[in-house]
Length: 336
Image (cartoon, rainbow, N blue to C red; front, top):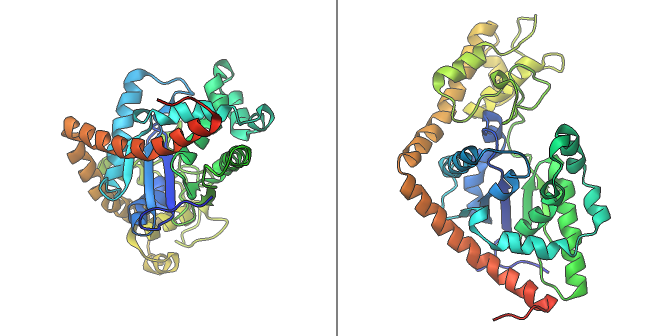
């Protein structure tokens, strides 16, 4: 079954958990491109707060993280007028569809999900059913909107494959109901690593936040982190396998300023490491400045932000309910 929209655009669905703080790496690697996708695709973006409670999180933190991420998504360029932007728990169809799809998911295939195994090992004291069922809720998120494309990282491809299995099983048992989504591993932007460990990804939940530059960091914090960035014992500003720190800084500078790595190497061929790190830090400050300023403006009016959330939820619920009602009827539920 193929999805068709009024404009015959393919539909993209992406959900982001409100945990941790999005980083410069998240921005340069993916987020800065999201706003422009609406020109080519019919896009839905969700703050996945239902997914956030599979791990222990304080109520105050969940509320603040949800508002922060929602405002940040607008600040990075996702226009709520051109995209459907909503908070997952505001659309009840997600929880309802998850329960339906649980009954078309085999225990064995759910048990094979590697993320469940990894997270269970990291927090053995909190191996809850929600953590196990996370991929089925993710399938509900995707299938509700007749999604064609799901942009994901490598670690989520397995979940999209499970989603396809569930959709195929349901479609075969009844009749074509769900579009068959495809995972699209994002490769658009630069791959950015930790400033303190350039062999590890810059993480939004990094235990040592000195290695991660967060989108909402102040300019002073950003400059401080770049001054402490690891380099090597050489003096040449050149990308190389044996120079991961310098290579990472060159990639950051290139992505932040729009030049190639080769152009950046030429620009800094006579520069010392201290001056080079300062310039990269300044480039990071400038590329994040408009995002931070727009975010701060949005957060000054909580009621206006909640109104945008409400509008997005209403649009999402209308789209989701069509699919949910179709599934209810095909299974055999009596509808009023």
